Image (cartoon, rainbow, N blue to C red):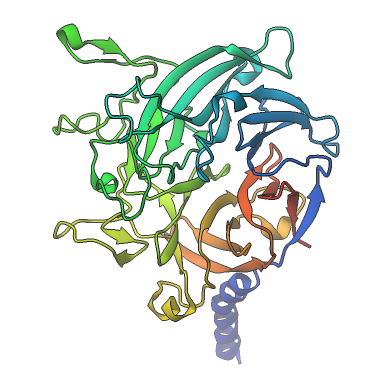
Length: 419
């Protein structure tokens, strides 16, 4: 009997984690919030890190509104507006004002950063048709007389990146737990990475960049010496690269179009949703110096010829565009979609059942999925559909309390909740 009891206890101990994993992903509901906000294409939302309880929502057309988190959005004021600069670059679907990041010291220095796009005038580039657009990362300061308004005259341009086409702009800015500013850039557009940007370390396109906004790095020699508007962290992976053409700003490469990334507020892990080409969507864990394969690979699958023996970081999860591809997937039981939207690991208090779940979705189909990941074992322990709903998801958002929101293309905003 004692042996039998020991066997049963051991069996229960081994089965319990499996049962917990199977039950670990609850279904979620979408709670409508901020109903007075009516503009379409909200692409980013974050809370000011100053204890004021203010949310800032970014609209692709070029404006940012500020409003109180506890209300319905009826108190929204215009904080920032560059619509006159036409950041959508003449109506391109993937250009615009795409992101906002507050300096970690925002409560005292009032600095924030934005990413936007602009058309290149004919006199700005010798071949404007080759680079018709540029992506801009700029630092701004809040008005000295109005905490709810930006001082547009304070703009300090940190970085400008020439863009050959109107799509695949990536565009999120976020400060990591190391205090550095991260920027995700797509491969510059068109289709199939025509310039091979994904595997070239000589370009900033198709990369995750890492910048130090608190310092300046001197580059060049002699009459070519100049100071960058930002610093390059000394431990960036290509700082000591023998290849003189490698860009030192690069943190990771081989990304096609990283549309939304986030840092797990508990572990610091970098989660990236990378939009695929024709067949596969993927979610990755960001590592310094990591090569994610594009355009030699799409997801975990061959796309173009590449060098023999090259090592690529495998996706944490991938999903196909068509049901007939599911047997070829790393995760055959994952449902299909067409355009991944990266999200967040939930660490809020309102929905304990979601604690530790990475939440992501699909722009086209509106599906919201979740997964649990064991960082120590480096493997998934659970994944599945949290909700199927009809709205196009532009982005997810996280507030200071760790609660997660879904921003829909038609302007609706929902808070994600679980029983």
